[in-house]
Image (cartoon, rainbow, N blue to C red; front, side, top):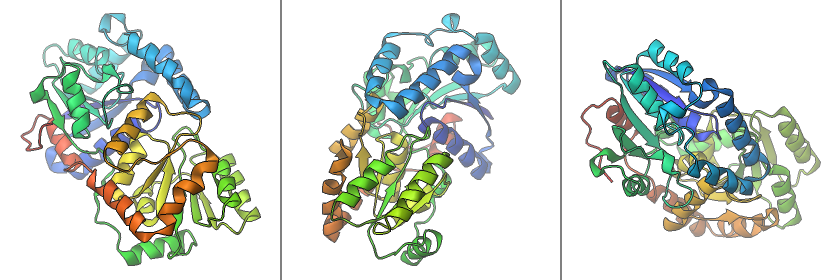
Length: 386
């Protein structure tokens, strides 16, 4: 079966899930899925491409402004009906080229008009249209556009997500629990203690017996690394730090220079990495924006997370924080100077750190992404329904 996966580069989580679906299809070759990934917004029309750029600009500069953007999209219906969509013929050409037996959306804006166009284009054999949603909770911040009751299937990452789909009109038998759609590396056997120590010592030149804090950056380069490092420097805490700087050489150079100037806080600055599954198992805690991507990854690895809320929390991030509160692992950083206060309990008491790890692990949904592939393809699957 050919599967056309629809995604967009608003943030990084959607593309992460699209790539994960393709990686699992390659790994689970017995399912016979031929996967193509399509950047549906960017490649359909310049208006949609502008919207993607605006989203990412807001995320990296003033996250709290995203409440205006989010509510504008919630009230509008630019992508609701095939008849109202601009660039429709360009997308039809993509559908005719791939002739998919299934279309999977992993983005909140692609579950209505694009599904309709795909079905209209292949009227003789319309594709099975499914949504995979990685959101973690319902309510404000969960876009109503995720849910199309006319779709064949809605797959939620967690029970709370699938339940919200039902509240918004998805039939109970079509709202399924799928678990996290992440790269196969996150489902590999966990690192042994010997392997963990070797990674810190040999790859990062750090002390495996010391508390290690991971600072991450978003897909569009949003970060507060220097402000957080300065906050640690002014405190009495002295963790060692790994700072992931994304694809920005300038950010990497600035952070590395800070580390050279302040050797009292051991620091390893790295640019982009595809070893997040390894990193999250090796560090003691991670500071990250409250997006679903890193949060889901941290949960699978049992890595305590401190949510970076500097500049405000976006609507989609708010529901991640709600999920974390419901499952007992919410730590939200509102100001850089508050980082030491959030870190100190984790550094001071091994039992506190162990409890935090246990809460992350307990919140994980069951299953592996193979179940998601089986559901998208319409194959028999015993995954529980929400």
